[in-house]
Amino acid sequence: MELVPLGPDFGAEVRGVSLVDVAASDGAYESVRAAFDEHSVLLFRDQQISDDVQAAFSRAFGPLERVKIGSEGAGTFYSRLHNTSPDGTLVPETHSQALTARANQLWHTDSSFKKTPALASVLSARVVPQQGGETELTSTRQAWSRLSPSMRSRLRDAVVTHAYAYSRDQIDPDLMTVSERTALPPVRWRITWRNPANGRIALYVASHAYAVDGLSDTEARTLLDTLITDATRPEFVYRHHWRQGDVLMWDNRATMHRGLTWPQDQARSMVRTTISAVEADGLADLRPLEPGARSPPVCR
Ligand code: OGA
Ligand code: MN
Image 1 (cartoon, rainbow, N blue to C red):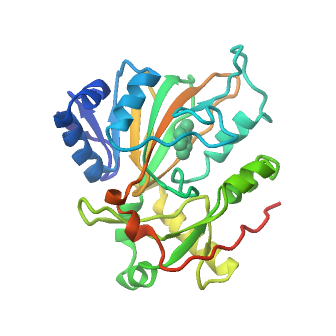
Image 2: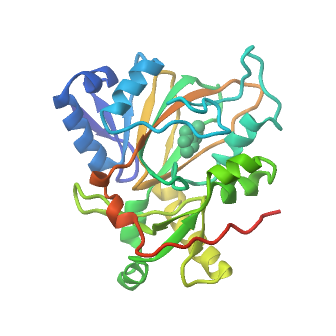
């Protein structure tokens, strides 16, 4: 296995090991897992990708999430991000699939709003538009290291509330149905996630985050905006230009990402599998000591 650096001090392209190798052998998994814990983002190029290959690879890392209610692929392991309908025609820009793409353009980390957050996401490119549609990623481990020692000690145990409704309401208050809102109540996590494999700490913030214990809504918004703005400064961002057959995997504990737009008269089709975090991935450290979430403010 060879690792070729990708982004500004994080991320690596994996050469000499395929998704099928990882699914088939413990040895290949262990090398790739070590690279994942170290580099946070891994790229595999020219993969013979299918849903089954993607799931078998992903399952080596832990239990797979089922796609949540209201998303394309709900109830299965495959989150389908595409702007086409079953008959192959492009969906209008007001369609929920198009709005979902817009919500993915906010910097986020996947599943921070779920009761069980995600260790990693695996995204494969099935149909790539001619222009645009890149995915950008940044290391929140580096963002954490850039904070001053006093800021780090102030924030180490801070508790943030995340809700899917909060990020979706910024795009369109009608994007989520009442049953989705009921199924996805706010959750609370520490603002840092420590990787037990190497002790590295990363900021755990995202577009779903809105409240910070002990701060007013305005103070919380200012703090979160400041942290996200610094984490996503262009010099700290890796922009991935997709080729068909690319598979990109990221550590949701230590990165944020966002999609970029593309001309809506062009098709784009991506499939994501998501691996749930388990205790060995550092969940105990992520959980705040005491419960009690506030409802998200309504955005209009
Ligand atoms: C995702 C995501 C962005 C993109 O799959 O989780 O945010 O560029 N994707 O498709
Ligand atoms: Mn995402």
